[in-house]
Length: 464
Ligand code: F6P
Image (tube, rainbow, N blue to C red; front, side, top):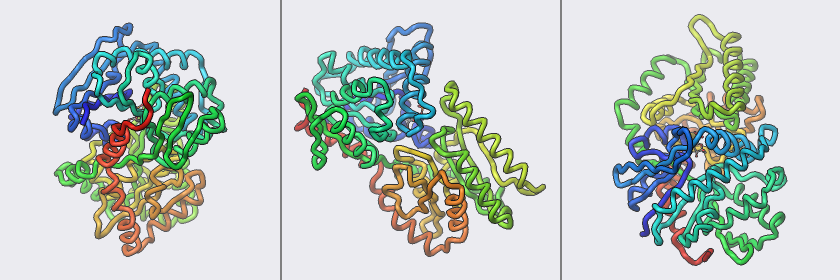
């Protein structure tokens, strides 16, 4: 197989794999593909520099070379905090109310994509496969083509693709999509996001779309677009689950909750995750079933995220207020109904918590996939599994249909689901778990990378 060059906004050195996977993000998913293909992983170092130099720092570890550049304050503000996380992220998660359409953000986004293309060019050889990730770098493929690159270049979008009627609110939306058609293969998490993209290409661009083969032909160039649902690193999760760290974490949680059922949520602190709505659902459950306050304790692990973006600062305040209100109203001297933990944990610790928690609450308002849902199932005891309550608006709901599927906007629906989960007999828990665990184990991250890379290597589509 050809050498693999992965390009993404964030880059994790292989040693950080456990921590990255713990947050259900992109980082943990890519290491194995890179390790078996003498990979290079290029992106932003996460560091700020006085002014941009394009100087690349490389580190080699476990067969993977990471190559990173630092960005200036202006680049970070306009590209990362700006266009990526204040324009595209909210819009792609259907939050047009939070979307900021600033010209400077768009310019910063184009500038940084051009900088990435310029910096990555010397690292890339003729036969390398190039795999670009996520909404930060949509135009990068086109920027590389402008430098004469004829390599096979693929793009995977980790977040949803919004319906055309929302997407057209983005100034210069056609430009963003036409740059995307410079890729040979475009991957989405689910058929729903793929369909929205194909619909846009047909209706707004007038491209020729063949839905059966997933090909889009536009201005003489053909691109393939398909759904490749991402999975977890099953083996790595099980390895972590077998550590003393995982066992201790589980025991710590169980001994602190004593006879009460632990219900767990693990999310980046992001408004797309539906955290205040979830707390409203729990409040409704306590209102309807005050006698059950002693049966249950809710543990919300929510490491802070994108703290320089105002909408993220607001969500944190809202969540703190709501949690405080419920605890104020419902606590007893020996009971605090909600524990809110504002920091991240290792994957081993999370495994211990997942397994100890008899209910997993994963209720985003919109999510590309959501790997926490899959990790929660992957950590369960097959003979006595917990219950997954899952938002129907998470990409994962298309595969995990035997979870209790809920509308995260409805406190009554959430309250009903919690009650049902608490009373669910072991036989039904097992039946639901057995129906879902196959896809969690088999449709794992290795299958995801090999499916995507097989199409990218294919060669029959998209000659530049
Ligand atoms: O899931 C989308 C994503 O941007 C991932 O690419 C990333 O790992 C995660 O969210 C965390 O976001 P950030 O890199 O902005 O901290």
